[in-house]
Every structure is written in structure tokens, then in C-alpha cells.
Image (tube, rainbow, N blue to C red; front, side, top):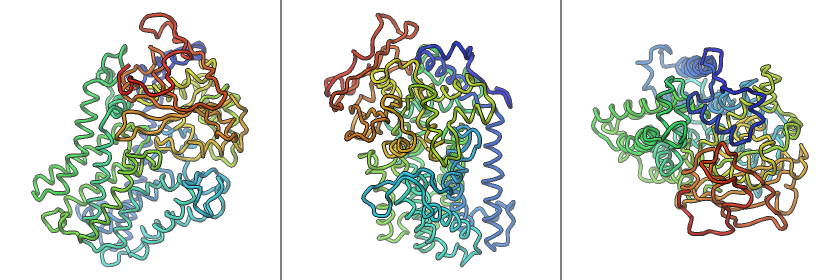
Length: 620
């Protein structure tokens, strides 16, 4: 990998694109194991520059110089434990998330040129929005109106006003904290996208505590809230999914340049690229254990040395995530949490009167209700709650989808979406960056190679094998990336691109039946070993069945136990409902080069069942 030169897969572009789909995904998945996305170091440098100079530099300068505390931005030892600086940096982080220049920004999230999506979509009348609930009055429609844009701009302005305000008794004036809370609440009733993109589930409770609690209760409440976030993420990492996240994440890390070490993340590269012992250790030793044990120590420790050591551990944890550059690129979030750890637990330790026992009992109950309701509900009923307020960030257990277009010409219909500040990613690469078409296509297909390394993809591609005729000739896209170019944000949650968004797309693009097939899977509930799926034909969304062709479920352990390229054919799919008269048209044949042995296996006639059987929870 060079500073400007990517590590492109070692294939002949013209002949490679003629190969069967799963052969291509195997090649790209193996390339990912050693090189990740192959992103030039220049791109990582841009992210680091944005983090250091835009987020930290401007944020700290604004927070310190507007607070009347008589300190300079570079005097870190003087201002790091100032409550007003902490408050303002929390709101600065939320503002950048709301503008779309923090998480889910840039090439690693599928916005190549221009690199910024967010504000370019959300401040423009007519762009697509997704409302959370149909029954809420005055929220009908799927286009942003002048009201939506007005609420959004007012919310951003209210945060900036609070950030730039002088101190009031050592804190931000309480009256300035209510407008952003009210505005983001109103936005959330009409627009799921902006509400979640602003990371409202993370920062709005903190701002609420700033506004209504006295100082001691405020500090302890934020301590409890941040520990709920950590512990919720730690709980979500139990199970089979997270190991499948860590291995490809580490392969994509520029901080780990050794191909030999990257190969060690897998069981037996290149024949078996399921997560290896090192990946599982990092997942559940460096991930699950850290996010469960260290927050509890921080919350209840009254020993200064133990507290400081644990603070250092949590800071290292967040810096490690930053160094890996995960594709959602939540860099600002991790830096904020690293600073919050130091501010809260080193600056205001429990032994100095800032322990859980020091908060008002009624307020403690309120904090727990606010903090635990959505994580509990979201783990039990992931269909009702996004994985963000469920506190399941980057644990691998997310709703996911893949899109299949009959041809590139069919995919191009998405460019009929107007106003839309971004073209399809393939067109961003060819028209915006001058990539030759085959190079651009392979670049985009690297994202589906990446997806196959995650647990959900084994089921999603099994569905394609059954439901898409002549699959090898179709154009397959990673839905998370595609969604980002349509609504300006995605953070790995398939709820951003479920039937609501697909219906809005179809109203404008008019796909014919059989042109655009979507396979979609819900997150795994914490108490079940299965994930439920649905297959949709976007051209049939206006039918009574809502475009759904089939519903069913698969066993998570079975999906995890397969290789990404499905050499044994599709995993078992347990059908629970089929559209009346629908017959699966898939005729996929496992290529000879992928089969571990045995005869050619037509996917349309094997490994599927109409109901639950004794294979549930069994490995393939």
C-alpha cells in the first residue's frame, strides 16, 4: 500500500468480472484478509487530519475560549477537568455527528466524492426521509419539507449557540440546553435518519442531565449513562457474531501493516477464514471483558490507584478502536468517550463524593429507566428498536441487507432520485474520480467480499442463490454503502433501508418486477439462536403483500460455521411464509473451484425446509 496508491486485488479486471459471483467474493474476501479495503494511506491521513484539527482543534478552541475560564486551548492541564469544557465538547461532538462530518463520513463509509453526505442531504428540501411511526400525526410523507429543514438547521444552530455561550456559574446556561433537546425530539418523530445520525441515544441523555440535575447528580448520572453504553455494548458481544467483526476489522487496520499477522486472525488462511483464536481472544478478551468489567470497576471503585489504572485501560481501548479505522469510522465518538472517561472518573472520583451512592435516589431510578429501557427492549425485540439505542454498536449483530439489480442499467435508475446530492457509488468512482469502469466495479465488489466475512452474509447469499435467476450476471451491492448515497447516512443498521426506504425509492424510480431484489435479515434476539429474514421484489412493493416474496429464518451457529463463499451451497433456510403463487426461480450452481468435493449442487432444490426442524442451532 502506498500513500496514494491502493492495494487493488491482483486480478485481471475484464476477465475477473466474468467469473461466478461466489468465486469473485472468495477472491475479494481473501484479499481483504491481507489488505482490508486496500485504502491508500492518504485517505487515513485525511481522517487523522479531520480528527486532530477539525474535531479536536476547533472543538477545544471553541469550548475553552468561549467559556470565560481564563485559559488557553493548549493548557490542557488547566482545562481538562472543567465541567463547562466537558459540556461543550459533548455538544460539539453531537453537532459534528448531526452535520454528517463525524461517523459514517468519507470513503470508508462509501462517500467517495464528495466525501461529505449528511448536511448536503438533510438541509435540502425534497430529499428522502424515513419516519419511525405511521401513527404519529403530522409526520406523513417521505420527502423533507421546509419544516424538516427548518427543524434541522435550528437544531444545529441551537447546539452552536450553547457551545459559544459564556459560562453561567461554571456551567453552560441551563436555558440554552432545552432547545436542542426539544428540536431533536421533534426531528425524531419525522425523521429517523437525522435523529440517529446525531447519535441522540448517546448524547441527548447527557445534555438532559446537564439541564435538570444539580452538579453532583449530573456527574454521577453521566457516569452511570456512559457505563450503561459500555456494558450494553459488552453484552451485545456475547454469542457468535463479534468474532466475525474483529477479524476483517483488524485486516483493515493501517496500524497492523504485517500481512502475516493479519493472516493469523483466521483459522487457516487461505482455506478457512472463519475467525481464529487471536480474533476470538481480541473479541471476547479485549472487547467483551473490557466493556463489562472495567465500567463496573470505574463505577464502584473508591481506590484512587485502581480507578486511574482502569481509566488508562478504557482510554487505550478507545484509542485501539480509532487505530483500526472500522468502516463506520466512529473516530470522534471514541475520542469523546476516551476524554469522558478521564474527565468523569479521574476528575470526579467516587471517593470524592461522586459515587453511585451520592446521587438522589429518585434521580437514580430515572437515569436507570432512561438508560436501560431501549437496550433491554432492543435485545428482546430488535425489530422494534434500532441497534444504536439498543447499545449494540459494532458487535456484528445487526440488521443487514444486500441489493441485487438485473443489470448496471437497472441500478442506474437510482440516479433518478432527485434532489440527491450524491450519485450511486459506482458513478462517484467513474464520473467523480475518473476510475475506469472495471476498476470501479471491482472496488465496489470489495464491499460485498467484506460483507461475506460477517455472519449475516452466509444467509443473505443463500437467499440470493434461491431467489435470483442467473445470479452470476446480476449486479450485487452492499446495502449499507448504497443507503449512504441515498439518505446521507448509515451506521450498519438495516432499519435505515427496509421497506420504508425501498417504497420511497420505488415511488421515484419505478423498477419493474424482477429487476431489483432485496434480501434482508433482522438482528438476532438475545434469547434466540436464529435470525429472521425476508426477500423483497422492489417492483412489487405496491402489491398487497408489500413486495415480500418469502419470510423465514436461519440458524446463527450454522451461518457462522460456513465459509464466506458457501462451498457447500446455501445454508438451511426455514421458510415460514411464501407469497401466493411464488416459486423460487434461483438456479445457482456451486462452481467446481469452490466445492470441497462432490457433485454440482443446484441451490434451488437443496437445503431448504418449510418449517422448523431438528437442525436448529446445529452447525453445517
